[in-house]
Image (cartoon, rainbow, N blue to C red; front, side, top):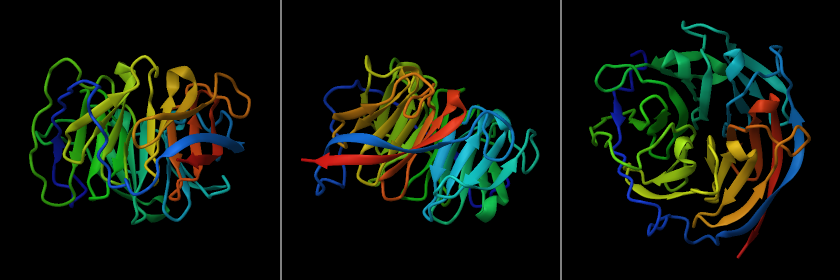
Amino acid sequence: MTAPRLRTVIVIALLFCGCGGYQLESGLHALPPTRAAHLVFVRSFGQRGSSSGCFRQPQGVACASFGHWYVADTGNDRIQEFDGEGRYVREIGGFGWSDGQFNRPAGIAAGRNLDIWVADTYNRRLVRLGEDLVWAGVINKDEEGGPLGYPNGIALNVDASIWCTDTDADRLIRLYQEAPSELGTRIQSTGILSNPAGVACGPDGTIVVADTGNDRIALFDRFGTLLRTWGEGILLRPRGVNVTPQGDILVADTGNNRLVFLNRMYHLIGEHGMRGSEYGQFLEPCSVASDPAGNVLWVADTGNNRVQVFRIIRTAE
């Protein structure tokens, strides 16, 4: 393992207890919950291609604390960086398995210390990029020394832990930068994650997973304990999730070609989009991310080979 500070990978116990009777415990109760939300279209950029600023099936998007955005340009096996206006800055990648190369990268997350983390899915590894997208290291083993499977989503939590989904093994993985400890083994039982994709961490440390194969999202506390699930009968193959600083949860409802908004109490407060290629329409969106203020939203409109930018308008109780 080439990232020296990351010593092991811990597979979290995933015991599903059903979707009813659980309430989200949050440190944000002093803030009024959002009652309604809608999107205002700002811009769209990108088209199918391999030139700078073009995309082939982009599946991940993330925003850094200083306002730059990063797109996992999955079909082009690269990561592209843009400024807040959507102007191209730089890129890293190209097909391969050596340092500086990717094979179908999917998830991407931005840290506060300028690090960018990438789920390099078909290379079965996690990649850390430093400032200016300089290659900084990889993680490619689990705690038993085996491969990671197919890591898909990746997120950074407030306690400096790193969370990723392993689509191949239907599991959620936590990595510690310091003093890792074993928390348990994935339980084979009805209700475990199925083909999980995106993952996001809230400001209170909770973790939200796009449980794609079960057509829902799942919420865990920072110790890996299930709090609740949501979306059965509403969502269809959701692949992307985001939690804003306000605690609102945004879901890329991929199979329904739309975005779904929940407040921190898991009340549905809005939805946006339909199948199409016009502005504000989507074709299998796979990722959604907000800026550090929670007011601007970028969407990886995967099937349309573009990124769409929106402003979030909220009303409170």
